[in-house]
View 1 (cartoon, rainbow, N blue to C red):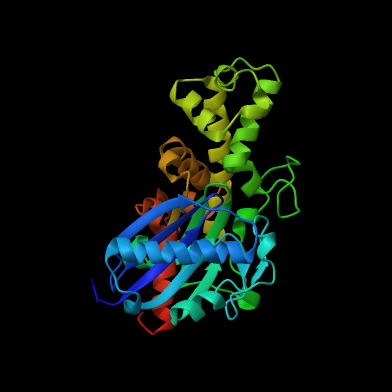
View 2: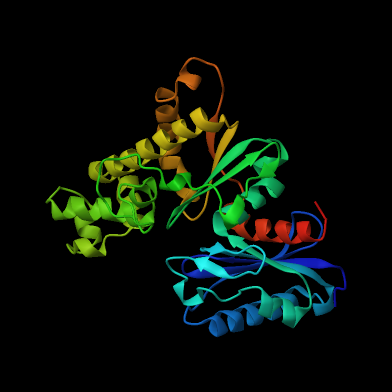
Length: 326
């Protein structure tokens, strides 16, 4: 049994939860991903306990070796009490502390925060942050989260809040967003938005491979279908991704005007698809930001190299910070 001290990171997505273990460096000694069930605080804690115990056993660590636990969740969290304040998919946890039962069971400090903040800590510790002290993050997947690092510090705001430029309005489309507004970049460019673009094209009778991929059932169109059709040269799907990239590029141009980051890093479930959009994002950003096209500053939008691990790495790093291990 490994008695070396370690930290545990947990990253809840929309449908899957990731468990990871690291020691004192940003090198994961264990990582796994599995589906999880919502339902009640008790059910979530049961799954967390089972996942932690299984991770320790699989990686060969003694339970007493754990120094701290960090948890990444798709919800606004009270950073002191671990209570879930708001989250469209986590309303069943509203008001309940995510962290206290875990701290009581394992006898170690436990910290939780919203997923874009944790992913930004991960990128700061293990990714672009190793060489860049001023950058912005976009977590691109089922939603568009945001994060900022300025002078080497991840920005966390009062009242348990955080940067939310993923909900900037960059389109006149009146698509309702889960935040309550309309036309947010979040709802226009993420997984559900890409699928909706495809669904509308099929419903409009456009000649597209998407019709075959969805079995002529527009409601069955998914974002992977749009990417597949684009990869097969479908003009409608390519135009959809071009539209998505332009909207993201406008947002990135606004970010450069606001904070002049050296880099804008894309992480999240759609990062592996960045090859389809990066050139257009960068071109649109440069064309719409006078600071860039006049050569007064420089910025590049890039894909993260951390793949699926930014959230757990950030959760581990934030747990380390609780113990003064910066």
